[in-house]
Amino acid sequence: MKKVEDYIRTIPDYPEPGIMFRDVTSILQDADGLKLAIDSMLHLLDGVEFDVIAGAESRGFIFGMPLAYALGKPFVLVRKAGKLPCETISAEYELEYGKATIEMHKDAVKPGQKVVLVDDLIATGGTIEAAAKLVEQLGGTVVKIIFLMELAGLKGRERLSKYDVASVVSYEGK
Image (cartoon, rainbow, N blue to C red):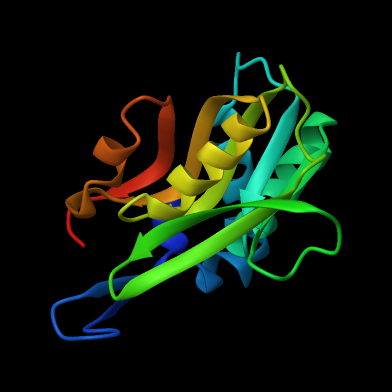
């Protein structure tokens, strides 16, 4: 039986020499790989009590939506700045070369709600840490953060050490 990592295409030296790029599109393009990925992420939520799933743009949408659907939970968008039509809150975070801002609608998470955050990949953890701050600013509690893949060499899990973090596949390098 195949494992999730069997469906992940690795592209050496992209986008620069020494980087092993883990390509999620090879999972999405294979029906069995996609089903296995979603089922594996669902398994990470076994026994977790929560009210809402929130996903970070854009691949967090791809993996978060089927999880929300399968579990009968609402789904909240965490988007790049300027993409949401209603009143928002925002959080800025550091990129390798600069800064970025993400936003959520002010009414997306209600005070006291328990939230699961979803994204495809954890690298440095900056994006999802900013998403967690938005949830908390709205009065929600982040009860779990899940990823399909983790680049352990970039130490994003350490950055998120105050949260319950899980990934389906972990790679040692960058």
